Image (cartoon, rainbow over all chains, first blue to last red; front, side, top):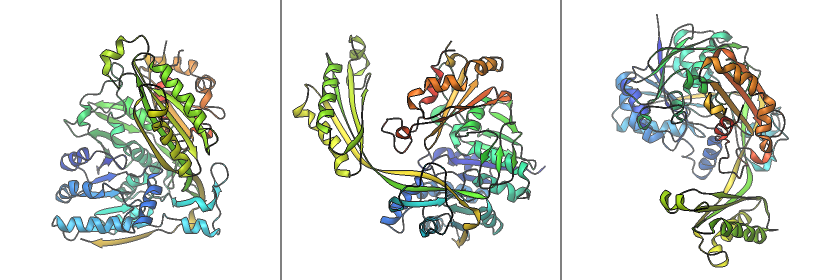
Length: 443
Length: 99
């Protein structure tokens, strides 16, 4: 029976690269997928592109490609990733340069675009349905990206692309597309698409399926977490899949890790909305069939929705923060006094939602001295607040620093930051408003 | 008993929504979760953060429950002033619950 082996080499933009190299070298893969776009990542990338037209793709793209490309070329593994972020064309151009430098000519590298719908949204000609409260003021919008489905990836695979780089695409679609391509599934066989989406959803967070974000010593122990291996799905034509990881890699893959990942970021398990299918995970069966081998079946689905989700990135003011530590006798009371002073000094300065936290167990003088104290030996006061202007937000850090010469005794290690808040608003637009493009280059 | 003694949990986030899965470590303990960890009890546990009721979904074949929590606006991922803006640590907070 025909099987397809897909590995997941990244579960977020900054993910570790060694497990992907291990998968490319020893995973017997046909496809290596890197999922690198969290909800806000593309909005941040759009800002980077505005500052530099050649930027806006994944900051680790170059390092990842250099690490895995030789192995993927030698082992015949095709790469699919959303590392294109806000600039898939530039990501492809950079990958082309890397491939040539490494001596690989004739590789087909495809850029998938069309997810950027900011201009259409701004034109006011597209019906927009807000998924939350009222849409934010258009003046504050910095990006709008629709979640594309499998169609452009499928087309690029049919056109023999070796590497496919996309912008915003629904995470499971990165994995579902090669399954549809290999098995020739109908785009209207909702149960198969539901099962394929299940495979994608389990893989998309990489290490979270193999014991990452799972260990709780004494309750849930994970061996070899320092050398965590990433997951592989071996899929057969009916969509059922056996999940495993490279032999000898760290981590654990069992019923419990699969159950946690199955429900991760899922609301109603019977109605998981994607551009390609409304997947139903409510009847999924997870069976342990060997050490670090799990069979998953029972994903189903219903007809795909008529709308596509759009992530709208917008500017939402500034957050200012400052921290300072107090230690030794009476530390808590001095920290509380510092809080009261800050609250008074920051009052009426354009800052809203001012918040104070007392952090601390053993970060200043280590566990020995801390343990001998009748009260917490140390406490770190944290102040955080929101403001419309950067200047107002920056006052929090300034006032925390000023505690050195204007506050209680013995404060130390003041630090702070002021950052612009890039918020996300979700909306729906009609599917037929979106037109994707594929641009193929050879190395 | 505390939930950590019989179950494991993971939190996920989608904007102002936090999802919490709760899974029995042994299949035979699932009825304890089903009876003891109602949507209302979870809503009460996280009262100060929430805006509206909690939804609960049951997956008996996996020994798991899934909760959907809607946070108040000031606790949403992009707006929150808290150190754990995503609400990732809510999974441990749930496991501290007594049933």
